[in-house]
Amino acid sequence: MTATETARARPAYREVEVDVEVRRRQEVSDGVVTLTLADPTGADLPEWAPGAHIDLLMTPSLVRQYSLCGDTANRAEWQVGVLLDPNSRGGSQFVHDKLHEGSTVRIRGPRNHFPLVGSPRYLFIAGGIGITPLIPMIAAAEAAGAQWRLLYGGRTRSSMAFVDSLQRYGDRVTVCARDAQDGANFRANLSSALADPGENTLVYCCGPEGLLTAVEDACKTWPPGSLHIERFSAKAIEEPSPGALETFEVECQRSGVTLTVPPDKSIYQVCEEAGVDVLGSCMEGVCGTCECDVLDGEPDHRDSVLNDAEKARNDVMMTCVSRSRSERLVLDL
Image: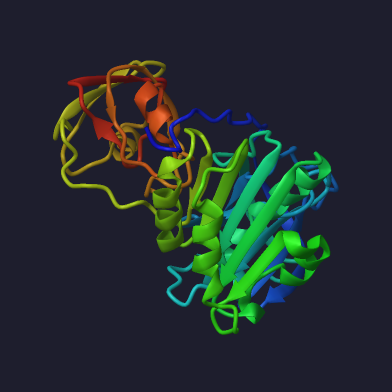
């Protein structure tokens, strides 16, 4: 059993899809801007909790997910931080080039697959723009009187968002930039912090895949449920998955139709083509938008959202990437 196998309670939110205005735009580090978003009518936005993210629907075919990183108590505004990715597939480039103060953009959400579980102690680990979901988590831990530490690594100090505002927490925050004298200390600090399981300590980590893999490996000796991670991109999976069927049936119970899923199409694609009401975004098994309830059958989970315990329960699945181990799946669609 690995450290990510216990179930996480996911907050249920009132999701909305609405046009919001960019009320403020601020460059918080080299290559990172924050957008403060508000309903132009002045209406409150839905409540959210640390770890939540929203979709930015920039064009009909360009939808990206960004973590909320502002004040959870501020219902009038949402804030996201966006890194200009040199290998951008269009999302971050659009944000940096097109979304200025006064611009309007459609948003959908919030939803949370990375919730902060109550604990007396936390170890937060961020790599680069992975700091964004941890900012409200740190504020919540501080407000709850929990003990916490943050290890924050990045390419250069000038590229690391929110470094200045984190200074108020003193030596609980360790910042290691690769271009600085202490740059080599990040891996050493990481190894030291994770060498022995911390008593009643939860680890929250977000960042590039190399960091997440290293943290997962280091936490294998920690108690189950200690580690919580969020990925930017899909985790590599073995091909083919043992026990997975190439072709299978999906019964969409609420729609009253049964569909055949061939090897070259996803459940999501087949449902959408048949006119079944499905919602999706990333198509990589990362964002959780297409999550649906499994009423019968055994899914072949191929997403990067559910942890091992949640996959073992087989009560939900991500239809954009996951397949089936049984001849028929019955889904709440």
